[in-house]
Every structure is written in structure tokens, then in C-alpha cells.
Image 1 (cartoon, rainbow, N blue to C red):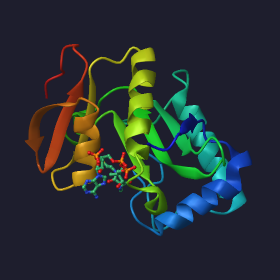
Image 2: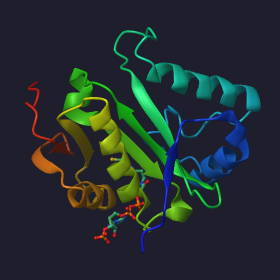
Image 3: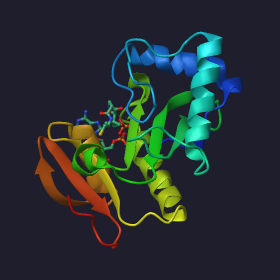
Image 4: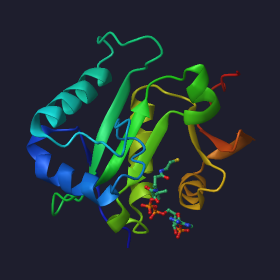
Length: 181
Ligand SMILES: CC(C)(COP(=O)(O)OP(=O)(O)OC[C@H]1O[C@@H](n2cnc3c(N)ncnc32)[C@H](O)[C@@H]1OP(=O)(O)O)[C@@H](O)C(=O)NCCC(=O)NCCS
């Protein structure tokens, strides 16, 4: 049975669970977290507060963002029974030229200790529902051509492969008109 999960808004009251999760990643890529340099994630309480505030603000369509940035809903993946933090998922509300080619709408990562338990699959399913609620159709999800775990996650969820560009497999969900480069 896949492990039950919930998606929650980033929240400083979950500081210890966040630190535990980030420590488990040990400097490896935390896709969908909003952390730009995984070697130097925000750890100090003040930095985490600033980071969480930025994630919440960039979800709000009323927030003005720097050029090239898009509004984005960030969620932390939790075990609802233990409150353990299992990973990150983010839904970018629209595509820039870069996101259309490479990054896609949704990014995610699962902490190493919790992989191969169905967590990315469950989180992607919930994120796709959330994207639908935001009126997003179609939704693009991409992965590196050699990222077998992510590829399987996307294909299991029903993503339709359009093509592979610069080593990225580009999958669409939904029937809406696909934007062209
Ligand atoms: C890719 C990643 C998100 C998968 O998370 P996960 O929670 O382990 O994935 P799931 O348990 O939901 O597995 C989904 C499917 O992929 C398969 N899978 C997972 N990891 C795999 C791997 N390393 N190799 C081959 N298949 C793999 C699973 O067996 C499952 O398929 P199945 O149901 O047919 O058995 C996780 O490995 C990760 O965070 N990697 C680093 C960051 C990353 O690559 N993010 C994605 C960027 S596009």
C-alpha cells in the first residue's frame, strides 16, 4: 500500500520537521522546494522564516514578482500521522519560455529515506488536482531523460509525452491547447 501523504503550505511551526528533511537531502537537489542552492539551504531560524514567507507570498497572484518569475504554489509533503516531512512539490502557475522548454509547471522531490514508497506519485496526483483548481490546462511536467524514477512517476500519472528537448522529457496532462515555443 502506498504511504498516505498530505500537502501543506510551508509553515515555520514545522521548523524541526523541515530541518530533518533538508538534512536528509544532504546537499542533493531539492526540486520543487524553492531552495536555489541545495548545498546551502536555509537552516537558521531567521533564514527559514524569510524563505517560508517568500514561498507564501509568491503563491499570491497579487504579489509583484521580479521579471522572469512566475507565481508558484509551494507545498511540503507530510506524513499526516507522524507529521514527518517527506519532501517538496511546487506548482508554477504559468510557463515562461524556459519553463516551457525545460522546467515545466510542476517540480517535486522526495527525501532519500522516503523514496520508493509511492510518495512522489501521491504528491503529483494531489498537485494535478490543485493545478486543475487553479484553472491550469494543460499542465506540463518534465524530467531528465535518465531520471527513471521521475519518468515512471509521470507516466503512471498519465502524462502524455510530447518530445525530448535537450535531454528533458516533456509530458502533458489535460486536453487544453498546448503552448508552442
Ligand atoms: C524521482 C523521485 C521524486 C521519485 O520519488 P518516489 O517517492 O521514490 O517515487 P514513487 O515511490 O512514487 O515511485 C514512482 C514510480 O517510479 C519508480 N521508481 C522510483 N524511483 C525509481 C528509480 N530510482 N529507478 C526506477 N524506478 C523508480 C517506482 O518503482 C514507481 O513505479 P511502480 O509503481 O511501477 O513501482 C525521487 O527519487 C527524488 O526525489 N529524486 C531526486 C529529485 C528528482 O529527481 N525530482 C524530480 C525532478 S523531475
